[in-house]
Length: 103
Image 1: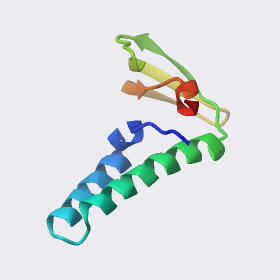
Image 2 (image 1 turned 60 degrees about the vertical axis):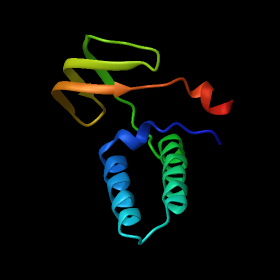
Image 3 (image 1 turned 90 degrees about the vertical axis):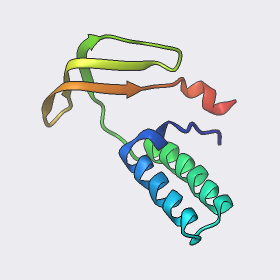
Image 4 (image 1 turned 45 degrees about the vertical axis):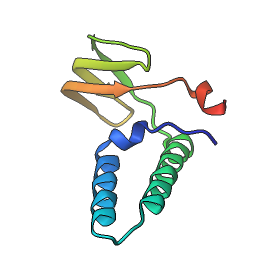
């Protein structure tokens, strides 16, 4: 299964990376093992989002930027699902074509 490293920039991904860096720095973990942990994290995040997330959300907002990997920065965004809705001042969404995962 091919994966993207996008989830490493999430809060949990950055915390994992910081922890692994600290463990490598103090000799608790080898750099090779730290890399393997990050690769497994990428695979696990991709699998979990594909198989365990069942919610569908509608998003409305003003699109300000878009580039090759589809980075959307929304202002005054409205997230809605069946149970609730939430207004957010600013949100960044990084998306990529799932067809690239099968290559």
